[in-house]
Image (cartoon, rainbow, N blue to C red; front, side, top):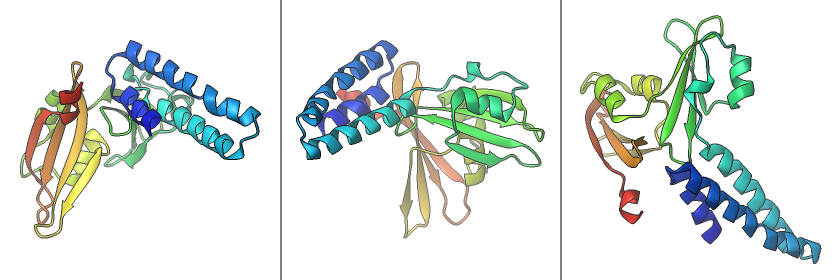
Amino acid sequence: MFAYGRLLGICFSADWRQRRADAAGLRAMTVVPLRWMRQGRVAHRAAGVLFISALTAAMAACTPVSARRVQPGMSQAEVRDRLGAPTLVRPRAGEGEYWYFVSGPVGLTTVRIRFTAGGRVEDASQVLSEDDFNRKVRLRRTTREQLLDEFGPPASVERFERSESEVWVYRYLEASTRMVNNIYIDGSAGVVRRMDMRLDPSELTR
């Protein structure tokens, strides 16, 4: 559990040098289960394999995707070869597709790529920022579908049965500071009622 906690800490670190140093420390920790493997300890062998697999998958998810690696005119196959599989694919209204690449276990950055009907890149951008939220979210007008189109999947969704309302939680970086935007959606109308952007509680423990 201690190792897994450090693993999540890597994802939340805004400093790439710290992420690399922490990752090196975690890789060193796998030496112990590997030694157990050579000693024939079957239970520890399974634990070591699972830990290494989790480390590899989590580090891949933590690596932020840069929109600068995507150029207009690239094909979907070229984008997939360069960035891997998208986190989410959504159809664009009328034509084409949106591809979303979400980094970290709970977001922080989301790169959205817009493809034309012919499967070519129209543009790519990192869409989670205070400016984007303020410009694109219109109170009592923006719907759930429009939120997904603009920002991709939220880090989490909390539902309240009595009021039939929802809170979509988006975590993002403002400079190097972790922030959270709680977007409250009216259950009956299905539109955004209000937004609450504030410091992410995890910042208080840094």
